[in-house]
Length: 240
Length: 240
Image 1 (spheres, helix red, strand yellow):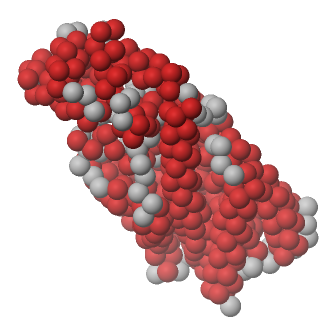
Image 2 (image 1 turned 45 degrees about the vertical axis):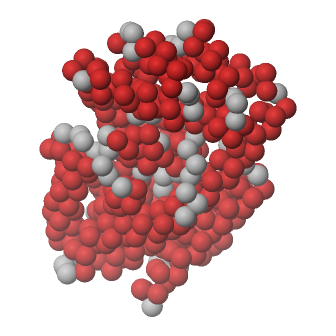
């Protein structure tokens, strides 16, 4: 339920010139994408297998709680790991620059050669880049390892935003079952409401990332509809 | 349920020197992380609310189908979006290099200044990097935008691996309910089996990404236990 295309710009801050969306908006999108899809599909699946709306609601709420904790806490711990990973690599590069300067200097030269610089220009550039150890390490972190310093306050913020968005997204399809007499009736309303939300959400998500918006809206609705149909089919098959 | 710390090295191939895990292993980890957690927690939640193991299994299987389609298809579409995004940015950089060469040349100079190169070296480097339009565009893609060319065959492979891993992970906690008489008994076995799997999986996942392995094992089990307890509490609360 992760979305690499969305997670990527979030982490690789290089891309910020061409992307206008903030980290928080991206977290909302990550949470909503899954929240609108999985609890909806589970409720749809159960609607084909049980007679009680209360049961569909119970399972749906249990899923929302489980999913938002797994996503939120999982995201938080992953964010902390990223901060620790950066710190460990930073310490390692500092050590390498001190203990194996010739190896690290050769690596700088190699990176500059890959860019397309001539030997003469490289010689001057390597001398300048390695003149200050701090600058040297920063260069290695960014261009050899492709790592940007993560903000340690980002992890708890992201966790909270993602799990809230998941819960909000998940409650939308469930509300239909509160106001209808049977799961079948609930499913009809739930599907209608959720597909409209998926279309609208897919549209804005695609606009945000600069993708064709109508195609994005249809893709989002298609994933939700397919997941729900498959869950419905499987649950029906078992209980028959 | 995404795990940015795992998704990141997957996308930023710079990091490959310091990371030994392959893209496929990372996809397995992404799928298993969620598969072992969410269906387990949902089944645990329902065990506190219903009397029938068959119902727990039905809901669990519906969740696994819904989740693996949402993750797999969602991941596939995200991968395709990444390929399209790269192509669009590539076309845009080609256009900019042709139509606004002075602007793009200034951007190259700015990037080199950020690295720490002197004005003299920058002048030589800018002339060399912009002498060949292909090389110039490649430099802008990689160092201005931080984009690497994605492999178009990666998206369907990743989708298949992630959804299979999710389904495998999700079936583990469910098996307990097949062989026990009541949901309560099923839950006891399911929790025992799943927590052992989460510990083992967390251990190897952390080893793979170079993190402290015992702490990683405990974190993974903690997320699963918390998600399951919360789902159990909520489901029990509603049905009482």
